[in-house]
Image: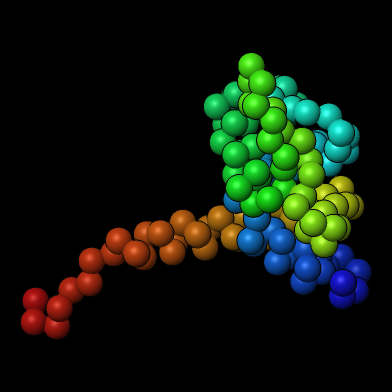
Length: 134
């Protein structure tokens, strides 16, 4: 991993955020789960931990699972635990959580800019273009 200047995020952490996280809530759930990586979480427990609704937490858990960051176990409920698919992804996810703990403002700024760019890209995809003849 590259060594960032003081107060800057590494390119690896920045890339992880851009590729795998949609919001601060995604990162908060990931951080909580990474702290106790052997614990299995359901949507209700994750929701309570970050102050979200169970529906929001279920959406976040599914997103993180689709990005190969969580294991899934189906019992009476669907449960998840932090278990990235390989050691490299695990190391980068943990580096991201560590960066969030040590430089939360930089992480929030990056997540905000990524989200704004995604919203703008979505809006641009539906923008109607006027012909020169109109």
